[in-house]
Image (cartoon, rainbow, N blue to C red; front, side, top):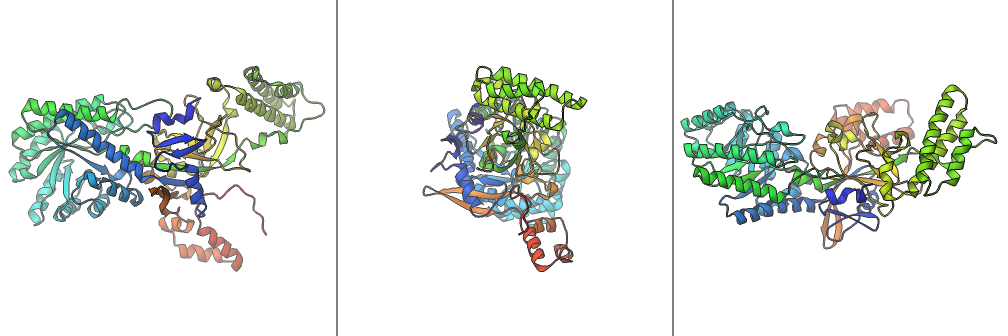
Length: 603
């Protein structure tokens, strides 16, 4: 059994466990449960996204201070700069606090589309850099010229020679100042981890060596050398190893030096893209380097190449978004139902005369002790398999089968409660049928799309009961009408949760490190919309909930996908009395998430 749900691995001191509660390790150290209760008291139900801008601020500060200290240590002549890639999370509730937190560091934004560029032009701090990646048409290039005319420090990263030709064309057609130009280079070096294909010679983006030379000749021919200021590369997101980065740095560093020596006098920046990893695992460390090591390798390598080639040490740019954003957001989901409730003793209905195996199960249940827990647990599973065979052959009836299931479940439950923590390895051998199914009030497709799409791990931890031993091997179900909406129990990375009575208490789970990509990739499968979100800030020792954005209503979702909502209401109103339609209209103005598991009583 993993102690404390791996918080020492993934938590980065952002959260702590105290008195059985998951708490925010900041300022007055509120429990996450107290924040959830405050939100729910305002009648916001269903799943919640809790955003913590102070964690974003901490990550920005840590990034800059680590590079600054390393630059000082190596007596490096270039500066450090960073931009946040908007594709990671474009939502204003995240971006606006980020921009404010980054102002003192001159932290900028990266855009990969016209819409993202508009966000950057509107909200970026004026002295902070803007980089523009991705494929571009003439309109997008013109937008960059407009941004430059507004005073923004903007660099267009060229993905192909045609884009450079478009920049030259717009330069000739307008009197607006030209933005800086960067060349994205296609390196032979690849990255590591899930997104390693972002780099390497077969990657989607970047210029080959031949194209780089052609690009240089093109800017020289059109008297635009002064605007060529940056070399850019990216070898993959969430790199779990730093070794590939060192190789890529050498390759890109030599390209930079060669262009400098050719005459690119204003070329003074190397943008190493993103890639800083986040620890998503709650079981073992998957990132094998520190931020300090990352910064040290970047600075040492580029300093060494600059000295070797006799050129200036370049300014360093990074575009790491996951490192900045992931830890700042926690998804909180209520547990609606435990599907073992039918196995409680109150449902046991033994007969006056029971089949021998049922009688033996009942004796095992009554006699089990800590000493016999393993033995009786295994015996009960064997008996259950035999009884199921007897049922299939018609030798026992449905009541016997029900009694067998209840007694087996109770024996296992009691055995687990008697075992020591070290004995949890034994539980991995148990049949999957003894798992507890926890029904959660959320959609995996909306809130954890990377789990569904690429099986990305996320740390999971209950918000309460953390001073009690969890005894249930947990499989998590969402409320979508889709069998993929499940996080099944994994015996290699087991999740154990608590045995709770939901009729007497609430039980909430927190999914951590969900601040990168999940908001923007989430889909409206089954028309479940974005959870209610809230920014949690700290002022004068108090917790303040800001920018509460309620989950979309059903009628708003339908309007979003182009239904005529007035037509819907008119058709629904047909053949209904006013009172019934008022109730129906009330439902239309609520979100799709479940209030609770309940029985309708027409009173």
